[in-house]
Length: 104
Image 1: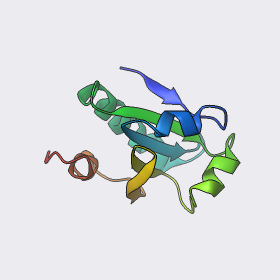
Image 2: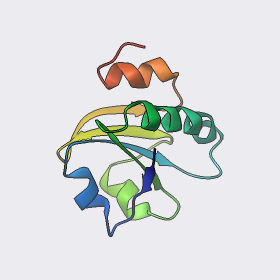
Image 3: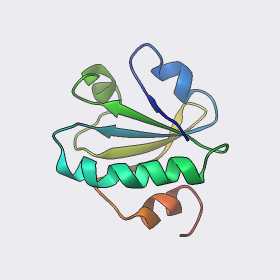
C-alpha cells in the first residue's frame, strides 16, 4: 500500500487516470489526524482499484485554491480527472466506503 504525496508537479498527471481519492489536509489539523488512519486503511483495502493520495494544504496552497478547499480535511474522489464526490470534515470509515461504492 502506498499513498502518494501530490504537488503541483505531479497533481494533474496523477488525478487524470482512473479513480483517485485525494485527502487535503494539514499537520496542525486535529480532524485531519483523526482521518489519516482511515485513509491508510482505504488505501490498503482498495489497492489495485483506487489510487490514494494526499495534498498538504500548507505546502500546496495553489492546489487547495484550485480545488476550492474551504475546510480540512476535505477528501475528493476523482474519476479520470473529474471530481465525482467530495466529503468535508472528519467522517467515519463507512461514509468514505459508501462514496467509493462499497457499503461498509
